[in-house]
Image 1 (cartoon, rainbow, N blue to C red):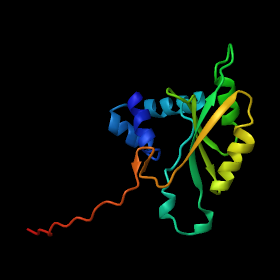
Image 2 (image 1 turned 60 degrees about the horizontal axis):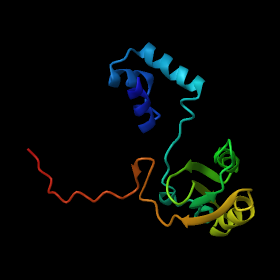
Image 3 (image 1 turned 135 degrees about the vertical axis):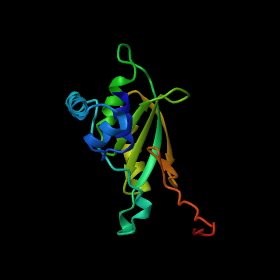
Image 4 (image 1 turned 120 degrees about the horizontal axis):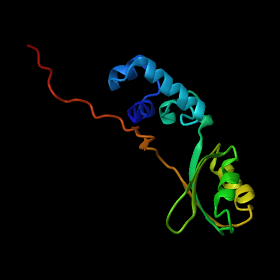
Length: 163
């Protein structure tokens, strides 16, 4: 059954029939498993991975992405969970991870400009109790996201062969 989830994670548009063919599991079982995972929250949502740099319809709507490392003072009984959950509620925040190393949390934040992200960090994030320090890293170019490469494939320079 894990194989179904792995296939859906790679391509959420796969039909139940296709999943059944690929896994050898009966269609009814695939349909029931997917419905159960959706109901339990194991499958959170289905999404498309978009290369926004390839969409030139409005260059003024460009978004800025930043990784923000956050150093926290832990609290007895909750550790970092309460602060991480509070940070996750901000609409600018796409993801929050508890990480090992010199920082405690790594957040991914989107904004309309570098200024918007910097305002978020200075006015909202750094003012939260127990936040000791932040380090912001702006994304300059995306090469790969969610397992999908954004690199343009090299053209095939081989000569065509015909029978």
